Image (cartoon, rainbow, N blue to C red; front, side, top):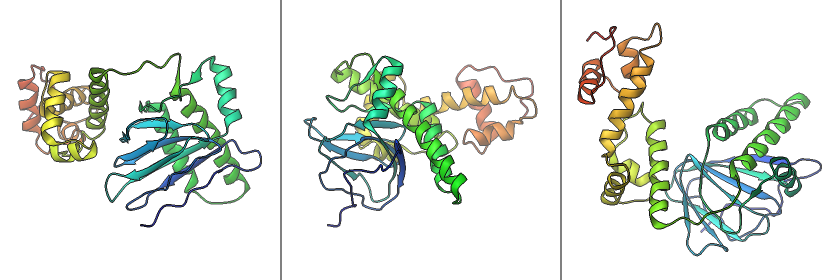
Length: 274
């Protein structure tokens, strides 16, 4: 089997960070380590991370991230054929600098999965867009500044005053939060239960039971309630029509949106005409 090439170091000269976007079918690496910190953020599909300090593999889903410290043996592979992720490599002295500024430290004794906050997702998106632009000295300078900003945002997202081991219930709650974040980010799409189960490496039965146990709602009810909430906010914006609001939350029929409003006890806006 062909493995994706890896390197011990990704930084040279006075660079403190490097942002790399990887989109490779059947992605897999051999066991290796880095001289820098690595922040791993899946964008499409899960990544499976094996790391020497953890007893079991980690399934890292989109909208989340992990941080692997320097000289920690690890290997990664994709859960499915098509995947895309971003790896951010950050110099150890830059991480230490950020820790001193924040007066907190990264918790890396045991690798944990963290929910990626919106500022981090936005920073990564900006960095990948910047990398795709033209060359020249100014473009290189802009790329370096963007990488530094992403690095600082990664460190900030991973800082914690004290790592508290998750109980089995806490782990389920964290996973359901990640599922909810995924559902919120795909409200404009028709996302089936099979796709959600596939994205998070669960069986359909486990997914639906766990989600209801934690939230008290079915996934379909959660999606519908979120669509109603978002549509209600959109319809308070001048110029937004019912057809537009329905389309934004993934519905083709304004009349169906009206039925959802009534089902979940949401008053129809005065402008709501079907």
